[in-house]
Image (cartoon, rainbow, N blue to C red; front, side):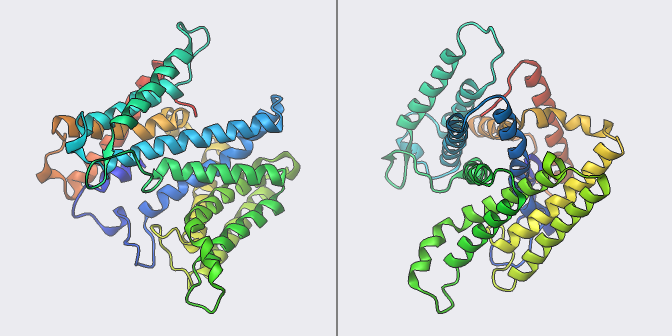
Length: 375
């Protein structure tokens, strides 16, 4: 995600490095990345919730944890979206770049994982972070005439992940970890999108009520596809020998391909449209990517090459927001490290690769400083 967000500003690269327009039937590597995020969220859900259940969390506590985590992602997503656009800077008391920059210290104060025994109380730091966000919300002006208040023009990447996490977690709890029930939930997600987007056919007009929820349904379906792969490979009740587990995983990959293939004539592949064909094909690629990495690391025990990515794996939310902190700094000081004439072709691509590793290096340093975000 860090790489593809930065490469979007580089000119004259092959189409594979850019999002395809929404009216084009197809997808690139870049169109898959967000779906990969959602798939990973889904894979983590059985591990995270089962760990909490084993630690003694009852259903009420578990539900509160899910709701608070979702709320945190939605709040951060809305602030980040309003930092990107929709503001009316002339009506704001501080520069928009400074307003955007202040979001992230507040987020770190609120969601940092404080070590035990820290003085003063972690709640003092969290309270300060909440106060900063409240002040930023009051200072914000948007629209054409500088009206008070932020609006969720869209939820942002983190907000969309938050909604998918919420619905996937609830479906998982209701399914009690049964693959058949999770599969039914995926089919329900597909049905919600389909019912809201078949206005070209002779269907009841009330089906249109599903349209606003189609994107969320597709995103949830991707996350639930990750849930199923976790259950196949790691759930105790489905435990089997390695060849059987791999066959089941490949069968799941094949099912996702067939679903995407069957839906494509009716809903073409489009990341921007969050179409079900895009969701199923993206899930298929995610299964394939995970199986390759699983084979290399867990089966063949070749993991030394992956250690460079360990800081991001241990602190993914901080890794995601660091580029936004840097972009706010660039905007505030009217500076960008790569001159405009070099933001093109191979030179620009090499810069983006180096930039991604620079972010990893920053995360490693911040990890050592005990800055670890955990919603």
